[in-house]
Amino acid sequence: MPGLNDKQLEACCITDGPLLILAGAGSGKTRVITHRIAYLIDEMSVNPYNILAITFTNKAAAEMRERVDNLVGFGAESVWVSTFHSMCVRILRKHIDKIGGTSSFTIYDASEQKTVVKEVLKYLQLDPKLYPERAMLSAISKAKEGYMTPDDYEKAHAASGKAT
Image (cartoon, rainbow, N blue to C red; front, top):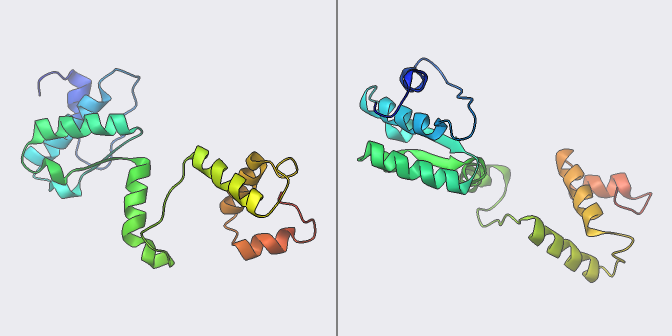
């Protein structure tokens, strides 16, 4: 495989079990991963549908997608190249009915979350100085981490009258 050093080539051709590639920025990790995908498809006859390539940013995922398309050609569209977040959203949308939800949910970024909390505080006529949106978002996050339902949260905090 052109453009790969010995260690990179070794990483591309190891096929027994999973492989973790740890390397610094600009060291060729994406090149190794994309060549490994091509190797698995071309040399090992792995169905592209069975390959998942995960990265951290949308930019990196788009770059990896383009490189896989260029290296693999036919069948490349079946390789799942994604970020962690978009993979999780895709799985959740497909299977959310298993937990009683609908696939029409929306995921808010930090700014949108603050806006909603401000709107709720205004609607409930609560003083934002007593209930700062950051504190409310923190309380919501802690409740989610504790797998608390709204009823659980209300019972746990009914005595104090404050979100903690």
